[in-house]
Length: 168
Image 1: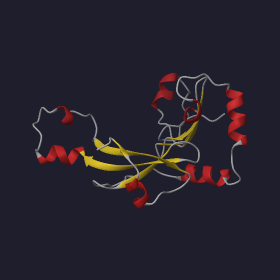
Image 2: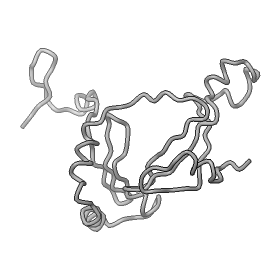
Image 3: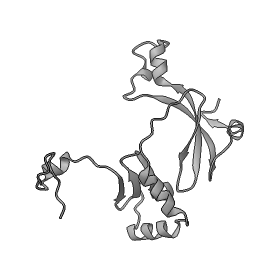
Image 4: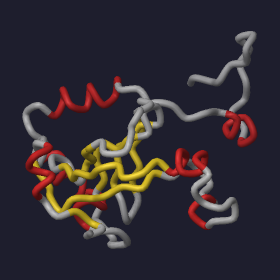
């Protein structure tokens, strides 16, 4: 049995208080009657989530979900999960007009464009201090999503021809 150790190397009992002091790290598997998820604490990203396929709030058969995940895994699955496991958190620098892609499910991606950095809007003084758009807890980023999904990438020219949401 492995027990946690203090900074000096002395073993600690695994009590609820000591357990709560621990910070999670690495890749984890979350499984319950609604969801099967493989995600990473280190990179703050998700490799797979059954909600992408079945929808949120629907009960799933855990055993069936595991078997389906294995059956639908491609030949390069081991390489992809290894890359995911090694990935660290990325600090992405962006500006208005930048295009981005995000994962929709195991092999499809959606696309969007940054419209406005809310932090720069706050610093510019264009809006009064009490304006609702300035009361976000984090750094707000206003984006436009495109009604397009693809297996890999999409060219910027292709995305510019697609109607985005919100429609203007």
